[in-house]
Length: 399
Image (cartoon, rainbow, N blue to C red; front, side, top):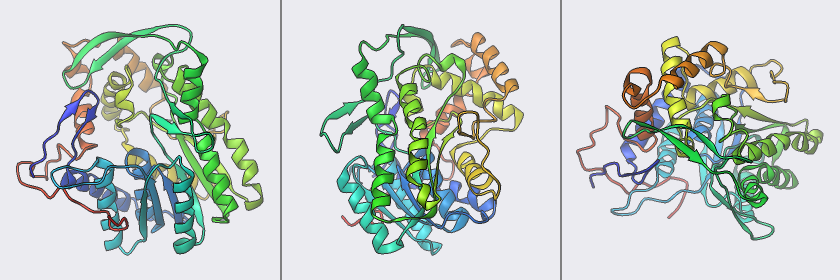
């Protein structure tokens, strides 16, 4: 079938198998161009492995240090006349490239919050790898059914205490407008967001992996967070999501205690603002990112997800030196974004931004292009007018 992008708000309802394969290929080529990561991981579990930072982490491990990887995710398979999700196609392309390179790669599709998928993952590790020496936790989901209580929790994206008004952008139309977001009405909304996006499930994973003796001595585990500039604090860091991120970061000491006898360690890596399916849904953030991209590209310091993760692996986790942490014990891969000169220029542009000058002062075109790249569209080397086979299988997942 011929697959075209069908967009509803911040979501693209279709994805292109050849385009997503091109996206994965480009990320793999970047990692290869940086050379092998000395003393990198060898057996890796990536929870949330099909898109964004999770996918880039899996690629960095596999093609940066020839690591065997198991990826866990929840994606819709392809079917006749019904394209699969981008994450499904990404994983199919990744596994094919890994197999061709002689690198072990298997995947599990299902609810990573559930005990059933945790057990299935543990069984696969025991069967094929024995133990893993790196666990990446990169889940991004709007809801979670708690495996112990059966309660379904849904996250909310809201400020706390008072309404928040600021600029935002419809990145498809290029229209800048003001938006007001009302605050949460009760503590339950905050608690639900923490239940979905906090550190409890990360801890459940590590507890069950350790109990099953599938964590190698010296194991590392990393989860991802974001801080951002003050202008986004009310909706992000000081909002409901921020409370969840605080909870995630506060899980690190608990995991370090849990892993002490294995000489293991846990980290939270604070990453740069990037175009992802999640960030596109947050008011204010797309405008900030489009201005940030303009400034960072002009300075020659722009990074995408793959550049971020390759740098996390090579310069922090496996550099051979002590891992550099901030005052709250976090790895900071957002260091270039948060440089004072960068933030000062973004702040000036923010004040100037209107619908009329947006194309000139921002990289809204780059934002739009990266958004479509997430779903396999807008790649120059892909012929989107030709028929493509929408039914693509992931080699390790049997229908």
